Image (tube, rainbow, N blue to C red; front, side):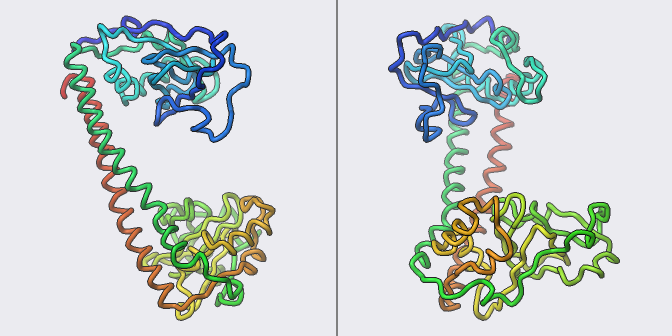
Length: 382
């Protein structure tokens, strides 16, 4: 496959907007390319004075000058304006197919080259000028072959997008199930009234940073509750001897862990199969009587029940990240419906988790296949 400098098939574009102030303003994103700025950001983030913005015509390319290494490049769908932070160029349609070119510019091959083209002192904020981009080696097969490659990659990417949509639906399904079953259920107790134990981990000199070791008894912290998912791999350790001093902080299967420092307000349930572990001072561990309260239900109530959320918002002045503490958690109101309904919810939530795990694995495999297709597409093996 013949390779040419990109500058052979592109030219600068994007004159100043001048009097074209009534045209729609676009942003260029990593995943979606050109998107209406107001629609993407839900508010006006662009300047009200757009005379220095760039005018783009349908089919023009634009990229974020300091974010091209992340793949922030797209093709203008219609005439519009974009911020001067973007660089605009036009491709020669007699030599390069636009769909092929955008696929190449977002490919791992191109992304690997971008850091070499940037200028600037700050990591991941290096500007890539059009002059520098023009030196990028671009594989350039005949136009019919370009169109064939673009069609294959478009089809494969569409399958990945559908899988991503399924995953996005599953991400919100558990909350929807909870809202359907319990949103109107009134709170009848506080957490401290239904918990068998509420505790944080060791404080101050009880556990120093220097006492962490490479292996031993696990210590669970903020990293283990990221995104409201229990992550066993993210952990530190103390020696068995140190653990003997801290046994009272041992977490148990079924404990509900709530982060109360740093990225606070995350909530997970400790699974049944983890080895011995303790929690840090950044985590509040709530143990419950399983005959009265299902841990999965309590986690969901913390995350989604209207009265519980209103309590957290009012007590932390609207920012759970800024001020959650043990007292607020103990006083949080929760409903206590019949245990069989709680368990019904927990089982439905478990099935969603199983489906989500399967969909995540499938999407990862499809991502790997797509990367392989891209590599083959731009070295002549597709």
